[in-house]
Image (cartoon, rainbow, N blue to C red; front, side):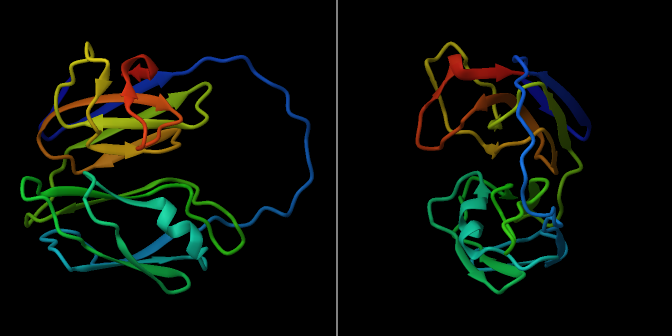
Length: 210
């Protein structure tokens, strides 16, 4: 359990496995990964239901990859309304939870450009219905065998004596490092899991703890 109130916390987690030798293989020439270059609005404060968020990228995007890669946390009950326009897409804010004022728009590395090149780093954009964001942040690095590792964050103390855990406050999929900005003040629990799926219950025995 950790408590955040205007400070930056660094966490580290090591994964160990036997190295495997993979022979070199041919393939297409490496190309530039898409990057987020412009957002509208610039500051995501005082957001409200029905508001449109515009995200512009450096490359033309694969439309099929957008819906797989974009999420809002804490999870909302409605499917996101996303409109695609070549190198940008727009998201309409769905109805918000009445008991939450802070959210995170997450774009994971399944986002690809038209040349099938994936996003190099996960994108985390803090959103709030309040007039300002906090300065709290949580950062960490993972080492070792980190294939298909996801970070799970709960905004409360978690009882790990239970067989199954509640849905996380925030999920970061397939990351080797992370930096979560503008976390609300409060207590947080962080863990990592391999091969996370929102359609499976989270078993304590499958978690790596920070």
